[in-house]
Length: 188
Image (cartoon, rainbow, N blue to C red; front, top):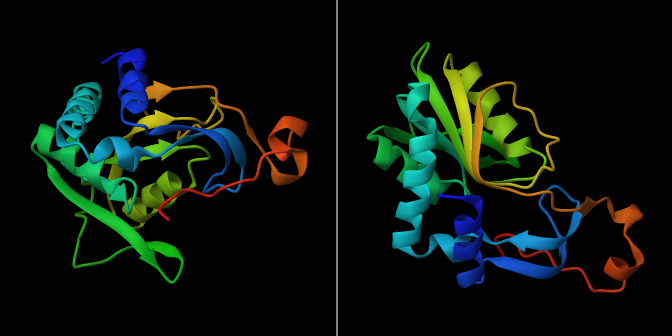
């Protein structure tokens, strides 16, 4: 799957939004990837999952780990495509944790899968959880990398869409963006 094919799928499902958005990272942007709109279509989930699985197959993971909520659907599909175990981390008291009886064996090779990465905070939290539980992270996969090349996980990282999307701190908005009311679409 090419970047253009993935972008076309986002556009055709209304999952690439234009306007003034506040991202989970706190940054402001003119574009917002609402992956849930694309990932509600199981044929698209299968296509995105197959493409990410193909890009990460050689890493030798035995488990896929995703941060909830965003990474759940695509993480599970990548695991299904690779025929691997799938687990997830979720928030508890505002912090991602491994719950529900999930265990990671010492040295277990894990692939982190997320939907959209801007600053990489949730991926980095997930990497740390895997490491704290004795696992070894072999790589990161994401549908959309909108980090503008600023996120380096110090390991192999693959994405279907890598865009240089402008993002601004709240106190450094360009005039045209400041003139538009901001919305925080996220999971609301």
